[in-house]
Length: 271
Image (cartoon, rainbow, N blue to C red):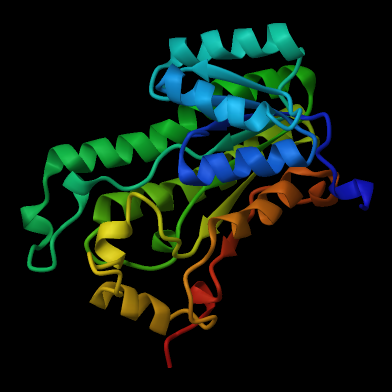
């Protein structure tokens, strides 16, 4: 392996590490020799994830913390620094859409559940800003680090029924650019902030609107596939390489970037 792509020995904090995407990245990072700190709201679930990660000899730590609570995150940061002495990578994976913020096909904006709107925007925006604020401070103090945020295809163009989620992911794209410039200008070129924009992957949050109970594609899924030149959904593991690349020295001059991993969805006009 070309060492410029290596993340071996780096300490990677992963929020939402017990989820599908976060869990896949945690496994990938462990296999690449990184030390993984799994952050989530349920200690029992995290412990099971860390047990899975360490069975093959990997170095992982589970810390229960609420990404919406600064004090909780600061306590986590203290524990990490006491154990490892540094934080090299932050993957802001926790987030996603919620049912109460999703319109049904026959609803309009004026049927929006505003409590759901508040919840989904708060979860995705502040759920990225707060961990960046806390763990990014450790990176600023040590003069190096890499933060990866999760944007979405909804940040490129309007996707029906998920207005709150789309607005939040658009904000994450902008925040990524803003934070990248702020940290580089004030703390040097060794601190980088980038984002990936996943295309359509089947997960727990979107399964019901993409897959019918009998396993067939919904009408929404058919529209997605029609606009995806690769003519398929992504496999969650297909995000791992891009994220690892952005965290490695191979990406040392990349900051403020948004990288789509989408089978061509964002490039295709549909005609």
